Length: 366
Image (cartoon, rainbow, N blue to C red):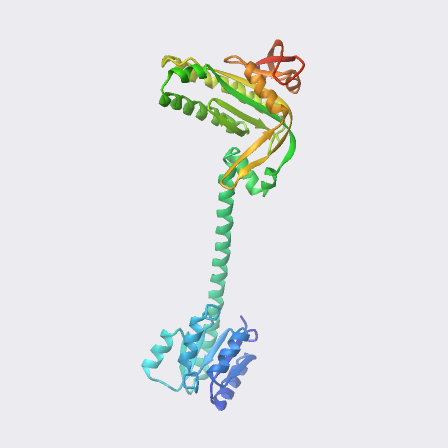
C-alpha cells in the first residue's frame, strides 16, 4: 500500500499536536488524513469510514485513548485496524497497558520524525500482510466448504453409480442428470435359480453369507462395466446402461458384463455346491426407452428406471435357466455381429400379447 493510498486517522485533543503530526505525515506522502479532537469523535469516524491506521493520543477528555483501544478491539469489524499510540505519558506501565489493549506500537511525545516514518510504514505493511493472510484463509475456508459439499454429493451419487461415474457427474456439475428424463437404455436383470428352495432349507446366517458373496462379486462387475445399479432385493438385481452417462455401445457393455457374471458365478456355484447349495444364475437383457431419475426423499434416494423395457428384461430373466443370458431379437440386432447367440424359439411373456423370439448369448466374438 502506497502512502497516498493509506487512510490515516489522527486523534488528539490538542490542535497544535494534530497540526504538527498531520504536517509531518503529509511531508512523508500521506495525503489521505483525517483528524479527531477527542475519543468520541474518533469512534464516530471509525464507524462511518474505513481507516488503515489510527494514531492515538492517550490523555483526552470524555473518552481517553485506553477506552478507545478497548472499544476498538471489542468490535469484530474494527479490531484489525492497527493503532500507534503517541503520548507524552512515558510511564512503562502505560506503554504495557496500551500494548495489552491491542496497540500496534507506541511513540513518545515529542515524536521523532524518522521513527514516526518507520513505525507508520511498518504498521501499514503488517496490516497489508494480515489482510492478505485473512483473504487466503477466506478462500481456503470457501474451498473447504465447496469440497465438503462435493464430497457429500459424491457420497450420495456413489450409491447409484460406479465411483468414476459419480466423480464425473460431481466434477461436471451434472446433478441435473438426476432429474426426470427419457433415454434409451439397456436393462439387465439377474436372478438366482433355486434360491427359494435354498432359503427354505438353510439357516438365515447361511442365506446372508451367500447373498453377501453374490452381491460383492456381481457389484464389482457392475462398476467395472460402467453400469448403474437400480436396485437389488435379495437375489434379484437390476442394472441399466447408458444413463446418466452416455455410452458408445451400451448393449456391448451390458452383454460383456453378463458374460463375465456367468463366468464368475461358476466359481461361486462350485464353492456353494460343496456346501450343499444348488444355485444357478439367470440373466435377462433388453434395450428400449425408459423414464429415469432420482426418486425418494431426503436421506433416502434411489435412481429409478421405469418403463416397458424394465418389465421386458425381468420377463426375459424369468425365462433364463441357470447359466443362460436371454435377450430378445431387437436387442440382439444392435450387437449381433459381435456376439454368439443361439435361438431358443418364441416364448409367451407375461404382459406381452405376441410371442417373443428369444436368444441365449453364449460368447463375445471380439
